[in-house]
Image (cartoon, rainbow, N blue to C red):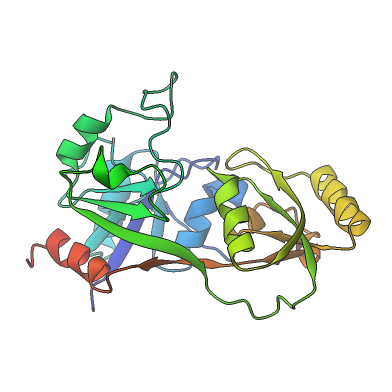
Length: 254
């Protein structure tokens, strides 16, 4: 759309405080976090513990539209457009706020500040008929970008350290990949050499290949990358105009 975009992230999991422009060629996940490395491959990305300073750095660089990675609860910046994303399989868990449940704030207060809700995957928890019945809800799916290189008859040991590892494993099953085993790690888990040695031994036991997410791959220790395959996924909105609509409203164009 010809809009210069900048992304601002806290850099969760990284040790640098910023503000600093992420360079995927030189920075590592333990420096800037795993997600900023992936975001930086798509658009200029700053990590900054101080969101305001990160946004100012992006603005000075010429960003016309600033995307906050996980910035919904941060009150320090005015937001022109706020998006809540729900997983159709997980829903809102038990509906309680941390530490009693998975939520950072009550759903009702979050929905009052949200301009749109994006529901990803099949609505197994009937969110559209309950908590989201009065919200502007758009739907989307996570789909493999390509299955080239994943031969029929091959077996895989899949591992993931993301928010909901089962989502990745289900994506693999939906793609008809033969999973010999699945191993879940905590979100943002920093893999060690021993972890990878254990995984390689497990894959050899099953006569299988190791398979993980792009987010996990950037946390694989140097020297082990050649032993791991990656399945990239893409978010596909069920209505083609959804993303353009979000951008236009954020920019005040309708």
